[in-house]
Length: 157
Image 1 (cartoon, rainbow, N blue to C red):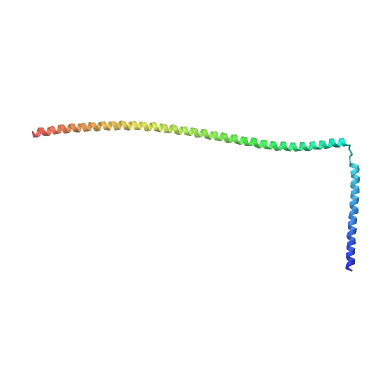
Image 2 (cartoon, rainbow, N blue to C red):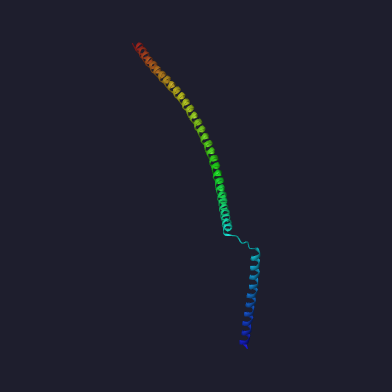
């Protein structure tokens, strides 16, 4: 009994496969009829011209894509150049600011040096004055001692 069921299943499968093949054959016939109605037959020269036109259109498409790529690269380069110019201007401004600050500091140092020189001159002048007074004092002390020594001799003599 099992053999009989297996045989029936096998027959069903073959029947289904044959039905599918028949349907496919019908579809192919329909497709062939459609192609015959819609097909355009051309001579070799017309076909060559059409092929050339198709190849040229493909090349044009490739070239257009290349142009778009180059335009994007150019835009990127222009943007980069603009950024570099901006950075350069900023660096130049920073350098100018630094130079002005250096000049200001140099002026301050020069002024401080002048003030220091004036103070040194004043100190030297005062030192000179003190030395002169010190000499005058020593001279006066010597005179006093000399005079004081004569008075002591005159009082004892």
